[in-house]
Image 1 (cartoon, one colour):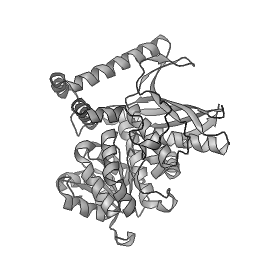
Image 2: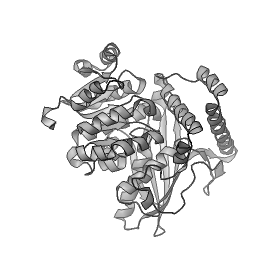
Image 3: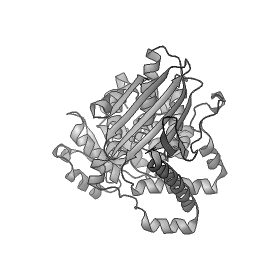
Image 4: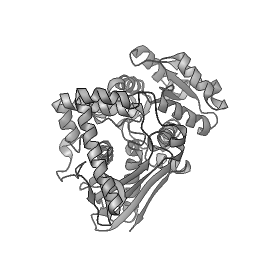
Length: 409
């Protein structure tokens, strides 16, 4: 279908969910005048209720009925739009039918998944289909994994401009303040349960190049492990395992490979959570490490998993407005190029990272795919934010109040 016959620039699928509502609100406030936006979900009444609570310009947005269990409805939704933004998770359970519909229709797609097995399945099943149709399927367009992915892209641009050679060792130290939603909990639970019962999933999650487009072509250089326990860096900062390192690092490595290993064949990329300095930083590092280990074990065992279901947030819920407003994120990236020159990059922004900031990231990604196609990288298929949208998204997020910068050090 030619772009001239499409009814919508952006369709927000899952608009009545917690994140879907936030993305719709961002678009209602910040999409350029004339952008044709529609809201979609399986319940017309619920989606219309959300629409009626959005800022005034959204009151005329069309509502589409679509359900992941109804392929015909998904095909109609995808066939009507330039871009479908899917916030319907957990993606392992609900995501693939939407990806398929977009891949077959030639419709660009963006999601906020942090589920490595889902992304791998989407690549294996629909990358070829999307490349043939021209669809850009861009995974990880929220806090998983935009800041990490675009920070390394920004770093690469600066190092290349300086003629300092490819990147070598890169370490990202993440800090953030925010809340947890039921959707995030459900995604984590699904991955832990699947890994506990399926050895192939455990092997996938252990592979640092799990999302590579060509696993056999990846270098054999060892990658930093996702979890090394609490430790103190050379500058005195204490760090601990970062819960999202397992997906962010694989997205960054896929971006490198999709761009012809532009960052460097010897790229060694790792992520940790910063916990501060001194005794307090050490205590936080040990506490976070222990808490992550206990949480993973609890999700893996049915008796404790049932107990967690009673106390953790339910799907469709999330942090309150005050938590979303006062949250923030910051990724401090330290890099050494193969020439030996050292660099620093920062990716940061206001708002609870998983929800307020993610709504900005996902909303701006959808607008870039819909409105800036002539400036996007010339790629289709199953992509990452850096490889599929790249500098266009960096520029949009800077304009939205986020920081992406790289400097020598």
